[in-house]
Amino acid sequence: MRKVSKWVGLFLSALLLSGCGSATTPEIIMPKEPLQPSVTSQETDNSDISQENSTAQGSGTSSPSGESSQPAPPQTSSGNSYTVYLITMDLADSYWQSIDQGCQSAVSELGNITYKWIGPDSHDDALQSACIDQAVSDGADAILIAANSPEGINASLQAASEAGCKIVYVDSAASFDCVSALATDNEAAGATAAESMKEALGAKGITSGTIGVMGVTTDTSSCMARKIGFRSAFEGTDFVLADTVYMQDDVANVKNAVSLGLENGYVGFLGTNEGTSVAIGEAVKEAGTESTIVGFDTSDAMLSLVSEGIVYATMQQNPKTMGHDGLAIAVSTLEGTYTEINTKTDTGVTVITKDAM
View (cartoon, rainbow, N blue to C red):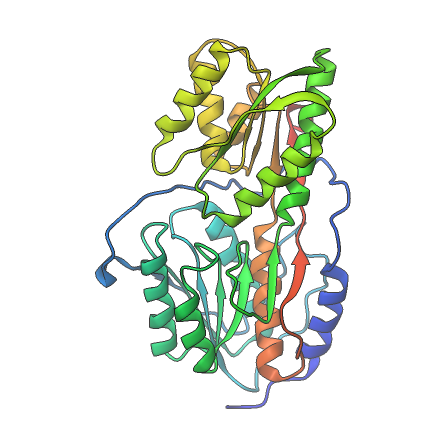
């Protein structure tokens, strides 16, 4: 390996210090680009692993506007060369594409990095584990990964670690040790969503009633944490939160639950990710009625529902920051200038409402 300039470590030390801690009350802003999750299911087969590779070396692209507070470091044209993989839950969602964009920005700033983004065709532990194994086989020095579940990919992560790979989590962490985890503080984000719900209901003079809660699966740790934060924020109020309904791989599960909730006079609904949030909004729209809906993420479909007034508010995450700062941390670790383990960085949320559009 060739020697990399030592500014990387200094830059990352400052970055970690500024990024840690609880999120402050978010400013209401518009997102720069839409995010659109999707959930599918396929049988385990290594041939089903999709890839999308990109390599950048020293082109000098600046940090994503509005998401990373750090100044762009100088380009590096010499030094050690490293191979870094990003592995997401799938490749279809524009949310993951935003993380990839953040990674590419950091690659352009650092130089001498071979960067590849791969992922399975569906949210599946076995398929994602195969992606990890592939990255190790291809000589990855570091892996950034959005873990599909807390435990299901740990065996492959352990094998990667034993092979010398540095593990950095983005968006969603497994329980296996890592260098750092960069993600939304999802419990805090759930509480922020609850405050938005209370604000909207209060404006209507509604101080009690039942609120529906929609999740993805019980294995999706980020959405489970949002649900916990949301429920906790309603403790001590006169509102009742219904049992969580999980979409699994069928949007009809959410739409049917919303229809039943409307029949029973529910005063509001929470969607813990883009898919459930859009399904709630569409169900309410199709019913020709109105309800107070708060959701997550900012796909075109979600923003359209907000602009129409069907969804009151949606929580925007900062995926580019996760990718940009996560890759920079991985490289700093490979350089030996960052030696901490299991650190956590909250990348925060912003609240999007119709009034801000």
